[in-house]
Image 1 (cartoon, rainbow, N blue to C red):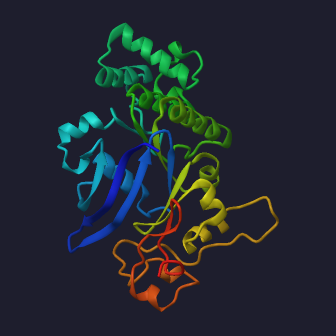
Image 2 (image 1 turned 90 degrees about the vertical axis):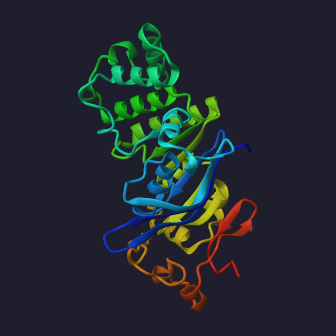
Length: 319
């Protein structure tokens, strides 16, 4: 596999009036050409903040205290804002979480798409228009040339998401970060959006970072999975290995809470995820874990090898 980006031991926190609160703890994961990595976990676990750190789009109150984000043998954390502006949207594209508010309502969708084409491909006028039409046709927007004249409010949620994917295509990005790309879309449109992303991945050899909490979607679409809990990666595995032999108690609890067609009682995860100001000794999952023992209350487990390409941070298997 051809590695294209590596996040190494990323630590991030937030400044408040009275203290500094750690939000990400030694987060590490790799992206590979032509593969989709799904970053999964409950809301507030740090998925989006990890991804936004790659693009240097973190809030002003946030601070990366240590770590590396290596892209083409360069640490993105050492780049200036001007240098990042060329990478952001150009080499690394973002499909934001909310397609309903991601387009400017004052300009036509075509104007916004052609602006992206001008910035990242240097094409204007008729050339930009033709490229925009091709992009709309690629994402299967019917009557592409005519729809470029529409304003965002004339597009459905699914159409807006396709338009945003078209913008990502026009940047010729090597990496696409898709932050909950199917949120608020019906099941049929969800499938169409994911099919588009898979086509891009396979046809362009693009690396995709998929941020989601939908394990059913992950099982069907992702190549690799990284599970986050309270700012830490607690398990990493290829798709088939994860869904047949997941290891961490949190991963197992997530899988057991997914509705199935079988007539069985739906399990829940007791308790609530901790907030960043909450101090927990040892493993941060221990207040909710039914398998915890004394060491879990005292020490933080590191990721250890379970099998080839499969790692877990749990003392049940990591001694």
